[in-house]
Length: 571
Image (cartoon, rainbow, N blue to C red; front, side, top):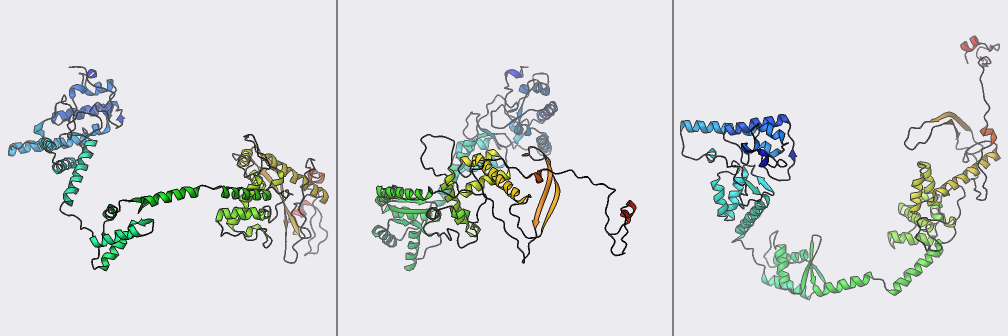
């Protein structure tokens, strides 16, 4: 017996030896033993699938040993063609054939009488009879044989029909076919069926008088563009007026369009989504030329735009009120010149847009503004913040902003980012995008605020919140504050004391507002709290000296600080 290694490409499927897109599986030793048992049983039943040869799979040491020695692989579909279920079907067919032959021998040829094709016979496509193994599919459905016979009859491919009748059943004989040949045969059959069904059912012609009137109307009308659906509806109405109403689908849209364009040689069709328009070619060219000219800016418009930009630039370069420690209720709108604000609002919403209370004089705060107005104010502040007095000649990545045009929004945005996460790179990224001040500016403002707050504490002689109201009953809550390093952004633990001051306001007494703190940019001193707050003397409670209040209800005033009396005292 010849060696299997000289005839088999073990890198391909050991069962079909075809190169397909299907993934190859690496069977185990037990799987190969099962495959050997199934193949031998197929050989006993004379029902071994085509393309599988015992001589190729067995080099004398056994099928499983041969496949295991060469590291054989196979397709899942090829293994399924010779599994236990297929063996059961083959055994049932074999038993039925034996029973039929014993009871009433019939001269009719059975599928098994054709035998198994020789392994040396090349595998070819049953449709084109080609031996190209690329993209070959195996017949694996019962409906394939019926489809191929029907389509070969429809397309009058008698050569294919003769091959199909000779092999009795493509599924049973394990025939192969190219998917491209299968699709070409199917499409040709469908086309032949449509041509056959449409033969003798010619659509009714259009009414000549109505079509002539409609074409004359289109040709004489001054309109440049016509919608085909509107012309079709006009045709239906004209047919109804003469007593010949059309059905729901008449006239056919494509035939109606072609009939009109046939008598209008200078016209062409154009589609826009699902709608189809027709127009004269010369008019289309004029419209395109006019559109191209309208997209260009002439010299007068260019001068007008430049003059408008320079006028806005004068308003933008005006000095801003520097940050003085707090944001006013009208900081969003008061920091922007009314001309710039109106220009941005018209740019965003069009000429019909309006800005209510641009200076914020008739409302308590900018919170009463609409959402679109707040967006216009924010964009105006960013435009002012990023405007430079002189253009830079070098293409540098470092951006510097003047404090004279520092608007409230970018400063507020930078302080808020630092308060939320305290991440420097987030603030620097926003600064590069022009929507926030730099990280150095944020730290500078926070240092100035801390310096002003410490001066307020020195003036008061006590540490209190700067927004705490005077002349009103106030309580203080003291508790320990322990923050351990548990978060991803945490860098250390903190342990201290938290003091909360609360004003108890009433309708009769709302307290006295304290003036807001003011920043001093010229002061460069280091912020420092007062000594009475920083230095806390140690306190120790002595359990022996306990003072118990007098029991007023019993009238006993001779209460002594003794432990027994303390435990039994009633307060």
